[in-house]
Image (cartoon, rainbow, N blue to C red; front, side, top):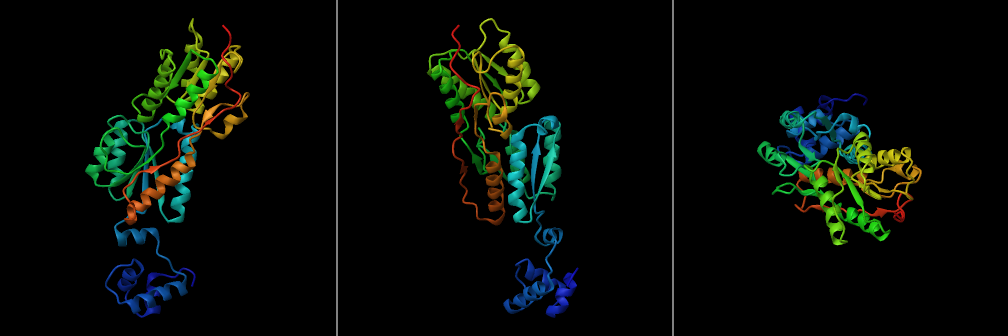
Length: 339
């Protein structure tokens, strides 16, 4: 029956609308035979409850919150977030959940967004871009909401995490450049207030020190193309410029490669460049970019599955460990120039 209602199901099964609601939401209050009769009537009529109705019956919003405190311009160009959100959505679509995405202009607006969405609009949050001593951990504990974090925070957290040891990729990138004879290896990083920004910086520095090299060529940037371009200009203007630059993401690396080529440097003969994320477009650069794989689609899949497991009580309390990232060597890295 097209457009069947809960009243139609109740009439067909010979019960009240309240009994239909109890049966279809798996709640006690109706006998097993009555439950079967109601389910059969609903199936015959082609009736399914709306998410709103299910939410009212179960006190759930059937929604997951994702609040991003990033510049909206970056979100439109950074390939990681597009893949990550797509990974979440493909899982939620199979389970009739929705993703509530909010972009916050600053940390004050971000905290307000968490409180606003926690008032019955979402059942939990996925936390990205963890900060050092992240205040959101305590905030979500206070709000008594479920959460999954991308990577393990540097402070105690009751929430499960989807984790990848991204620093291994950075170590491999530096070791690759050292093996090619580079001794002046710079790092254009993300903000050091982020756990992943600090982790990549530490991996770069530790790998250089392990090779007996200086770690004095670091510029803290912002993950944007303009930030990568400006940082590259500053590095190439140095008297003792680097012969290789390790960037914290592909977007900054792509901008840096363009700047270097515009200034007459040949990549990789004069300057080697590495990125992070393995965005699809970097394999089509000239030369293609050496980078570190990140697999944002899988990050999204695993984060969504972990959240749904928290909701239905099947989560085992363990973090999800993703395979370490791989260094993908392409044409943007080569032997150090003879100076």
